[in-house]
Image 1 (tube, rainbow, N blue to C red):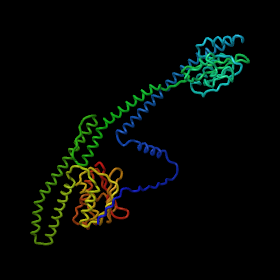
Image 2: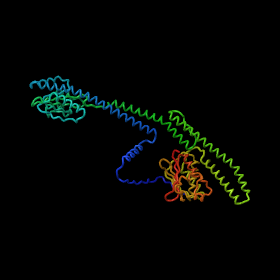
Image 3: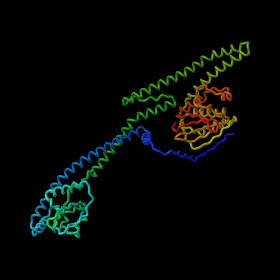
Image 4: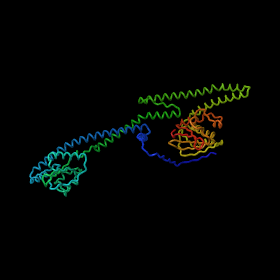
Length: 514
């Protein structure tokens, strides 16, 4: 009785982790693991790998260019900043020397005159107290400014306790520790140090000019003090646009350059399935022209070989019919019954071998047009045919996909495998499922299986074992090799193994896009 079971989903079985002993891992093992992880990140396709390597090269080159650019820009800016700082420090030094030389009663008069003149980015005042500065965080550019002023002013005012620091406009105090710059009117200096909407850092220099008086000087530094080596936003957008165009053009070039390789792969796959030559155009790069020429010659040679094989077997069939008939007639005329029986058996065996060889050629050379095939329907038809003659076949279905192939060839392949399971194992338990992007058909019987290590030996032509000869004396040992060949023409594979619980398990894979 044939049993049909349709299963649409199965719970995936988990795999237990294998514990590894803790310990020191060698450097070589670490490198191997790192290399293995790197290979796992690579795309499978050749265009994908080319594109990834192109990205790596582009970004690596851009990184090196950026490093060199930033270093050169920063070096140039620092040099320019040092020159500006030196010149400003000399002017500040002259201002300090000038105020230091003035009598006390004239200092405030000069300050009022400077304030009324305007047109400068300096704020100068004389304070009775030292002003506490909320110093900004130090940076490379700020250090250059402070150190430059400190060195220059110390060289001319060695006896002075000079304070130099950067402050934000919002927290800058002037006149005393209670008065902020932001509280003053424009006439008192806001217009000199505040550049709206920017919040530029202000350099504050305080120099004692007498026992109870400090010369307070605040100024804005030039743009070098900010020292940004990054590109402007508009240039960054242009750069990103150009880089995108470059990557798109590179991707298109990769596609054009690797398209012949894909055509070669497709032609080889089609030829391997149907043995119908798919000739490639011998043009393009010299490497591909050479490869395409060699591939085309290989196809012609294989096609000639197959044609010669067909003609050879046809000739053998024709040439042996007459002598076999004559031998059989002569054997029938022998008087000795035992000798006559032996001759007849040898002639019948020779005739069977010739017929079976010719049958294998015909079975593996089925000319059909590929079309969508439902493997579930094919298996059901085979099972019903087997049921009609009393064969024990059970079917279990999981998820499956249609394949594009030759219906008669696929049926011949499955019939050979299922018939073998029934004849040599008593029954056939068949399951259909999906595994790793292809249909998986597993056929298991309850027979004795194969001798150990003979899983590939059984695919040799005319290779039969004692159990097979006892169960099917008329067999010829060509069923499995025929089934494997038919599976191969559909891009599939066939393998055998002894099941741990007994019997032989046959595994057949057929890709979806066959």
